[in-house]
Amino acid sequence: MTLHGTAVVNGHELTEDNMVVLESGLTEIEIQLHAGSRILLLGGEPFESPILLWWNFVGRTQEELSLARDQWINQDQRFGNIADYQGPRLEAPTFPDKMRASR
Image (tube, rainbow, N blue to C red; front, side, top):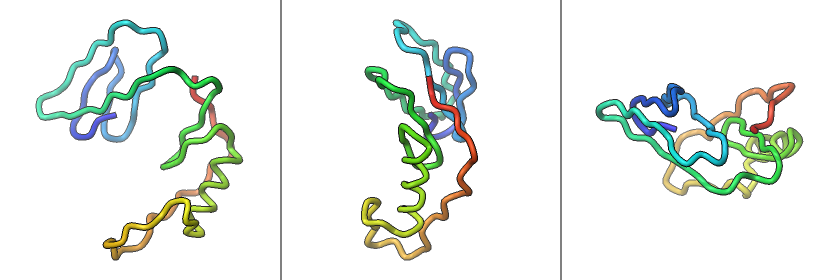
């Protein structure tokens, strides 16, 4: 994901609005970083089962994500609070009917 600006990673455009998931087993990646851009690379062993990414949540099933959304809306302590923040809590978007798991 980019922290600022844009880049191209293995031929895929990377912006502040998207991210790129690369297949496992790669020994090299090609990065074209545009001037002034900053990116974040995360890596590690692949998960044993597919995962779902939605809004600010990660889960193994749609039910887990739906529960997390409900907990967020109800200000469950699971998500804590930012003591000095005075504004309203971010509003979770409408939950989608169907999601596709990552590879």
